[in-house]
Length: 332
Ligand code: UDP
Ligand code: MG
Image (cartoon, rainbow, N blue to C red; front, side, top):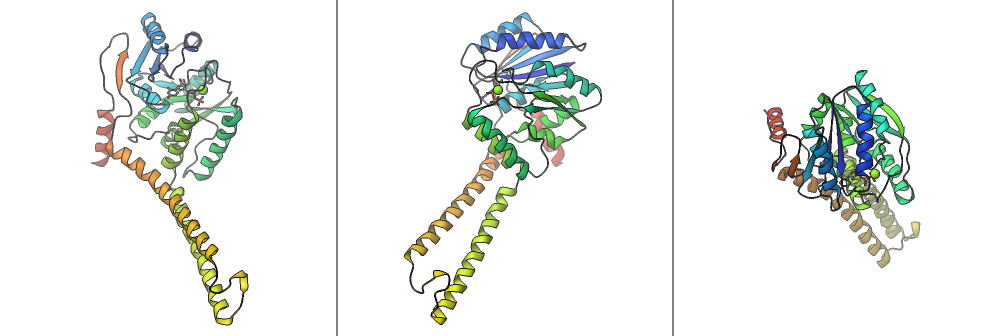
């Protein structure tokens, strides 16, 4: 069986066309299939449209979150609920074209455990079009192991890889990174990334910024080292100036413009410079500490209000006895 997981946040303009497209693509393949829509606290008609689709088609499940928990939480919920032997993750705005799914399934049948859909082009324009490549460049420089660039969440996970990702306990989830981290034989399919079919981008820039920070801080220690490097540079510079100053004072010289006994401006600049270096480093530390705090609190990634499924309905709270049990297992 194949599962398709689609996070939905205020996509009322896209849902009907999207489901029609998905259905015809899935029906063109021979396997059984299911689609899981995760309604991430939409405030428009998305939920009622989805439930309507679900009532007509038993292959559709709708997970209804209690509020908006974000793209990555929605994908994680879908992964945890999906029953398929292979699970495909994709956005519900047609930016991830449904026609690519059969190619991913083919790659999976040929033996890949992870299939990554990599963009050969990107339709984003303006500030987003500039920021995405910048982010991928920084990420490429900084991450402690290679994460495929130009790939988002669009892709396929074999059951084995999906279970591995589900069992990773971290709450700050950057799925493209986690997917690279678990490894397994990986295939890449290329596709042209389209523009969004209708509506505004739901991942607003602040959300994308948070996502980028999660990506950087959960996959690299390098920012922490930056503090040491900056400290080292400032220390070397300070030692140099002290020596010059000592020499100037002893021999009544004026090398490097340092006049003995003068320099309010110099003092002020030094204080400001060091102050800002220290604030930057404290901020970097804070990013890690905040994430540690998130992890120790172990709040659920999301809460489910209702699971609309052909056989089950009720109030369910996920997260994951399974995850906790796995963590205890590995600790034991
Ligand atoms: N989405 C979500 N929760 C959010 C924001 C977005 O479930 O808080 C969904 C959205 O409905 C879409 C997908 O995630 O199906 C990707 O969102 P978007 O197209 O805005 O992101 P982008 O293409 O800019 O990365
Ligand atoms: Mg989009």
